Image (tube, rainbow, N blue to C red; front, side):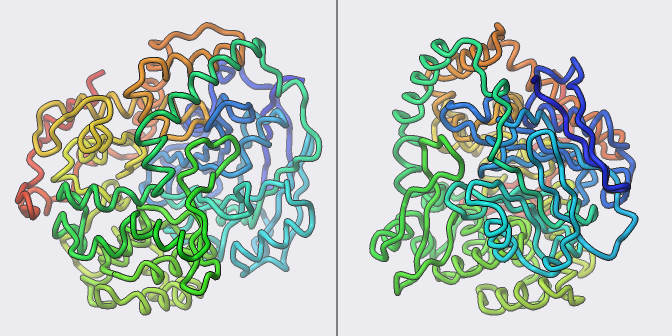
Length: 580
């Protein structure tokens, strides 16, 4: 049986299984979710209304033995940016969906009965839609435990917490990983879209697979290409050494030394207490307390850059303790205690809120006088009580950074297209700034990781403090990233792909062996370019313009210590990005 489209209509609580249209056959992951959203969603619809759709699609290599190929994409119109959104996550869902032969899962409409929430159980050629009043008001940990008790440890689980039930824009969709911990479809408020459709959780059953969907046309060629690809990942100094040893949090000291670690709501590029929260300190704590410095967020991961982090008594605190989260509540908001940041991380996993959007909003809340910089106890209390219970303050924080700034009349609001800027200061990493400005997703470091070449010397070096070459760098990386996001690969394959001439050809060889086709490198890059153009066309129809591709004005006139640089690109220089 060939792969199929599973379509769920929440209006009448029905499902259909459809053939894949010919124009979608060669797409997966982000390429497919963005194509479906662009084709089927009215760009001017309300993101939380009946005409938005929530689309899940595994990558082209998800469900295979390809190293680092366990990623799933989720797409919709974003209630945070008003434009298109794709969010990419590990976990177990992608592999199971691919093996079931689910090319994409499309959820549309709103239920007529708005009084409760539903659980969708997806299995081979079947979808069960059940009311789950017993889970209403529960957060992710309890929902996950409930589903694992109901089914088995292998079942994939995607769920939302209380903030998403309340359609807060900082909410995300949480996804079970192979060790029973949670990963996130973060950014863009996709949890609010799932909440608007009154879906509390989605389980995907691993008991019966579509055998035809697991077939590889040329298994020997696939196996050989995977060996080359895996070797490139393991031998690269970043993906093979730095990330496994210290996790993504290895970046704290690197960015701090580069003067590009955004501090105290983007007032400086250096944090005096970086040593307290850096990856090296984190790794020392983990080893001393009996945690684990390596943890894969999806099957087949050979980088293993995640971890489990324990408290001083050796009790489990959190998992997937990442750089963006540690920066957002550390350098950005001012907490110096790594254990307190870990405690907040665990709470946010349970609530299901985006680490970047929530942390940047909390930093802006300090500017607004809601709490003091570095007051982690108060930040925890606001999340646990106000955000969880939907108090007026909780809803203000839950609406994200841009809305908080408007409500409090603040000028220094670090957002692009309404989405918070991540942990790389654009005045000191100018290629990353171009990517933030131009990405169809709003400010998003994963859309085109210019830090690789600006700071980490991966794929060459483009001086992060100068304008020269940055637009071309951001363009090339966004095109390549859109293509990689379609394969089901982790974004960190970018490091060996930039440095090892054998890496990208091996990835393309795996796709060709998987499907019995003959893509070239140019074909893959053309795919990435077409995805970007599709996403931008949607945004233009939704009302975004070239004026949306701008960084916050305060960065144009506030010099950033220690380099004392401003954002000095002209509008015309930024607009040149789209000339391809």
